[in-house]
View (cartoon, protein in one colour):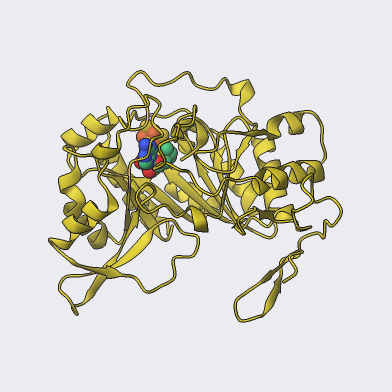
Length: 369
Ligand code: SAM
Ligand code: SF4
């Protein structure tokens, strides 16, 4: 199989990506094939770019950041709107990236979000554009985001009980989130996904109510295992609600069977939900077992922090300073080459379950979740 500017798909057909042929500038490692895309040593190809727009947030989820917040990145250190659009255009135009997800921190706090969406949606080939948000403010802005080019979004929602929401996020904003979800759906964003982190002794009895709610409203619910990415470094493995426990809870109320549709690079294992075995399909539910059943072997992600550092993984121990390259006046192809080389060295897996695992210095809110 030749890997230059084309994808060979399983039935033997070759799809031309229209990417430049960059033989001769593949990078420092002679073992890296001459290929414009973001390959790594383990045969993975990153096509999904996560961009953190800010590390700030208007909630304070206990599993993410402390009550007092964090030392936010000074705005001069954050990428400007122009810098973000330039890096995304390099990713899409030179590196074969096909999907862009904006995240944070809380990406809707970024003033230029609509303009960034508009400019990214004008890129060719047009990437699919998605957003991960806590949903605050979405009730007012969902329509504008859709009009600016947003295709779909994920809204984080851990509980349907107002007092619990206030305890988990340290803000009394449950109703805003529920209204935001409804507005996203009304704006035609499809699918609307709900991300839930179950916390032992806090909301782990809500797996079934959250699924009932999501099925009734037409949202796709995904449970995410809690990961060691909190700023406080307080994560403990035995306190994490595992994917297996979540499924056991769901099975008390539903028939839940593996979805035969291929998972591809998607992190969620999808399950078909019926009321009884052989009964009517009510919908689907995702379970993201990042810790107990990691999907690193299928990972197709590359990441940019708000301050322009490239990371090959949430748990990477090294970063590549693309902001310095941008501000140092390097041309697009030099930046693309640095990006390719960094991704070539992506680790095989995050190793959370290894005895030698050490949590990255930066929390999820700074890396971009
Ligand atoms: N503020 C936005 C939000 O909450 O959706 C986007 C950023 S947030 C870091 C992205 C996702 O990461 C959310 O769904 C959140 O629940 C999840 N998350 C945050 N900390 C986590 C952790 N320690 N383990 C697993 N998921 C976490
Ligand atoms: Fe903010 Fe999202 Fe972290 Fe909650 S999970 S504190 S909403 S960044």
